[in-house]
Amino acid sequence: MSADLIHALEQLEKEKGIDKETLIEAIEAALISAYKRNFGIAQNVRVYIDRNSGDVRVYAVKRATSSPKNDLLEISIDEARKINRNVEEDDTVEIEVTPKKFGRIAAQTAKQVVVQRIREAERGIIFHEFSNKEGDIVTGVIQRIERKNIIIDLGKTEAVLPYSEQTPGEEYRFNERIKCYIIEVKKTTKGPQIMLSRTHPGLVKRLFELEVPEIHDGTVEIKSIAREPGSRTKIAVYAKDENVDPVGSCVGQKGTRVQAVVDELRGEKIDIIKWSSSPEEYISSSLSPAKVVRVDASEDEKSARVTVPDFQLSLAIGKEGQNARLAAKLTGWKIDIKSESQLRAAIEQQMFNINTNYDYSEEHMAEDIEE
Image 1 (cartoon, rainbow, N blue to C red):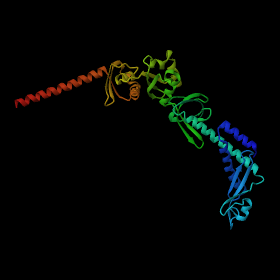
Image 2 (cartoon, helix red, strand yellow):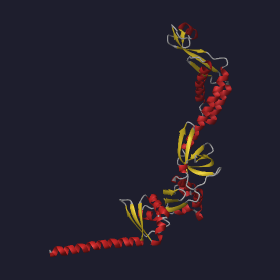
Image 3 (cartoon, one colour):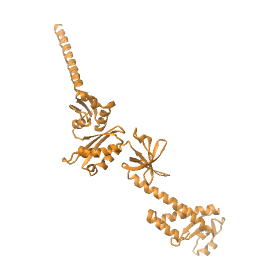
Image 4 (cartoon, rainbow, N blue to C red):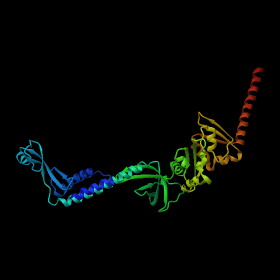
């Protein structure tokens, strides 16, 4: 051990932000264990490292007593007063017991402690950096596949894209660059564990923030997102400035902005609609691309009956009910879709039932009068 160690610790403090005093104290604690392990002495010891020269000294800590019984832990008052004449009964005395060949052990131990602390510090820095990015997107390179989980290199560390968070139908190729959404960052004994997602609606939101300056600066706001990963997404947007077209801003000139998001999502269809405070307008827009004739909304039940032209019924419902399902998820309303002919038939049936009940009532009234 020498002044070079102190200089190296000072450099680490500047470059890695690891406190020099904290490192020295950790080395001292490790050297106590190393001393006992190598010299097999069952006594209380203290290790001190000179902060300027780097010299290491080992001191045996003993209790001063008039009748010592254990030479490893106790020392007579007379012997103790040769070291410090002010010692009283039960005071502690430190006696230097530094072994001649302790320098090599000290250097090796110091190296191990420093390497460990550097590793811990780097893990802490990475954890702090990525924990602040929860709910954000990162770009990484696909490294390998382990038990259906994709391991992605983020540069400073690796992250995991679990099978449950992978988009159905997507292919992941080795060394391919990919954008993912950070859903969770956990601190573990092996370092930070970063969990990614390709299915989270937040991925779509962040991608639009990257592509649309109006969203990034807050002029246009994303009110709601409904997504079925790999297939289709609906996004409701609103402009705080009346002179800004929120849908046009997201689509971009010749569709360049929305196309960039679609390309990143590997061809997933995206419907962009204008958000409205009017439930009727909002629900009508949410069923895009279908045209809506009428919306009857019930605020209390959060349900709406939507009427569409006959030829638009299948478009409004969508393949396997997807369009209607996404619209309901986007708006938060229960939506019942009927075609004009279905509504007409329902009204006629209702009128028929009313008339039938009326006739029946008249017949019974006549019988009552005759009686």
